[in-house]
Length: 465
Image (cartoon, rainbow, N blue to C red; front, side, top):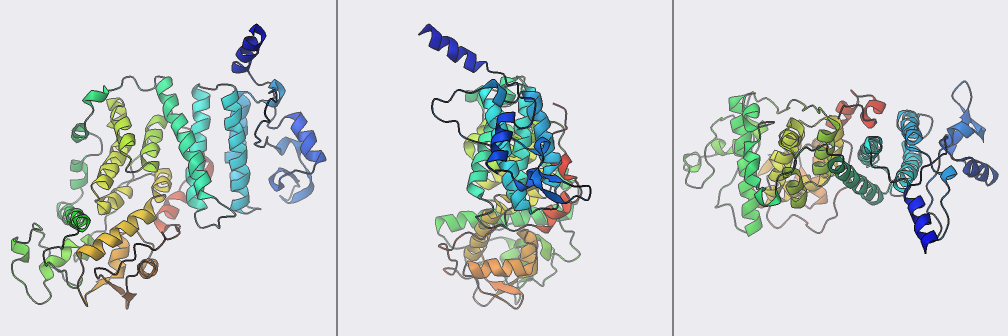
């Protein structure tokens, strides 16, 4: 019995002594069994792959330990070697152009899982382990966006999401264990009303850009919120209809049925048009918010945690318990606004705020983009139903963050909404709620942002704590 307790205690404090990226025993086994990955092959001076393995380029692959198998310290890499391996994978392998990205993803994802396994065996719970886990989170988020258009045989989004959520949970728990959050608000004192006291990315900063544009945007947001509530209750919009989108009136009033803006019905009813789309206004300025910067790894980790779990109430409450300096930072405050807008079904506001996210957070938000676009179309179809009235696909595509009007027309057709001649007709009862969710696409806005950041700088954490 004493011997078993001693063996268990030694296992808990196991420290790896393998100083290479791959243990020698595994190198010999895989060379003998010809289990060499194409990315582990030797490369000549011209960058061409050769037909024999390069031992120093081999990386330990993930394998589940057999039941009762003793773990050897010679097969486990210490944390500094894991950090070196991580840099090699994210700064070198991910930038390879001689193979497809699908092959790169499969290789790096498997090797990252082996790195996490070695950390788990050694009970790695220090700052270096935190950096490794957060780098893995960055890779999973970036890979989820970059590989979203691939077939299921090349990329499994459900498996990638599971690894992302598990690793992100480890990151959040490590921040708490390492006391990087100086204090935690008592659970019985946490309230969503505390959010109104945030002094980071607040409403005043948004209104400073342009008073007139912000009024139009707020009017459109309010309309979407009211329409969503009306559609959820199964009620109609009180007979209010929004005709064509060619008007140039700039009056934005209340959205009640008895308001002065809708009191007089004229041919064309131009005063109501701007309540649907902020981009309908003549001489408008398209909303492009300034990108919010990230000042620390913890701030980035919390923001990614909320974006991946967008709309999850438990996630919001966990963040509201964090120290004031974290939850009031610009990036975290912005993502909190997006979560609260999601809970209030104000999907237009969620989309608008997402334009201020930095590149990596844009990739995290992209996970939910097709869901938000579908919900927005169903709300617009329910609340702005008007027989024979067509709405501009180009302006709707700008509002719902589609790449172009053709992609929006394809989505409308997929969900049962007739789209033709550059417009879409909303009719109650036409939306096909049984239709499957459309496959995600790369967006031009995110592609432009990613083009400005080198891939190693995007994937490797370099910020201070």
